[in-house]
Length: 248
Image (cartoon, rainbow, N blue to C red; front, side):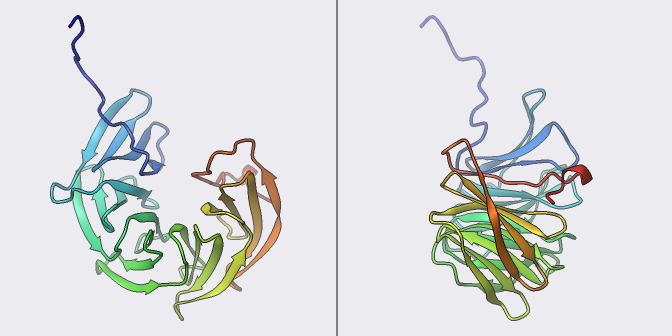
C-alpha cells in the first residue's frame, strides 16, 4: 500500500460516558474512553493522563469531579462498580460495589464526604466516602436514574429518571417526599442553582422546564419552559455561577 499508519489517537471519548471539566481549568477535561478515564488538554490536543484498573474490563459510563478539588474524580462503570481516582498521581483510591447494572449518574456533596449514585437498575445509593461504605439504598423510580444532586445541606436529594418523574428524597426517613410529573418523555438531566431556588430539567422534547425549588420544604413549583432549537437529546445542563448570571 502507498500509505501506512504512523500515529492515532485511539478512542478520544466514547459515547457511553459524559465529559467533565476539571475544576478551575479552562483547558482540561476528563472523559471516559471505553475502559479508560482520560484527562485531555483541549488546547494542545494531548492526553495527559490515562486511568485504568487492570482488574476491570467494563467500560466507563459516568464521570463526576469532586467539589473544591482538582485531583479527585469518580467514575462509574457498566458493571455497576464505582472508582474514585487521584488524577494527579493516577492512583486508584476507592472501589465501591453496589449496583447491578450500569452507573448512570454520580454527584458529590459540598465537602465530598458523601457520594450519591444512580444506575440502570433504578436504585439510588448514598455512599460514605470516609468509611468507604454505602449508607443506604433508595428505591422508587421505575426506570434508569439519570441525574442526582444533594439538597438542603445534605438532608435531601433530588433525582430524575427515564420514568419521566422528578423526586425529592428525605435522607433522614429515606423516602421520597415529593414526586413531580412535568415531562411526557424521559428526563435526561437536571440542574440546580447555587441558592437552591431554581431547578431546570431537560428531556427528549424541545422544552427546558423551569421549577421554583424550596429545598427545606421539598417542594417544586412549575414556572414555565424555555424552547430549545434542537431536537437532539439534552445531555448536560448547568447554571452560570457568576453573580451577574443568576436566574432571577
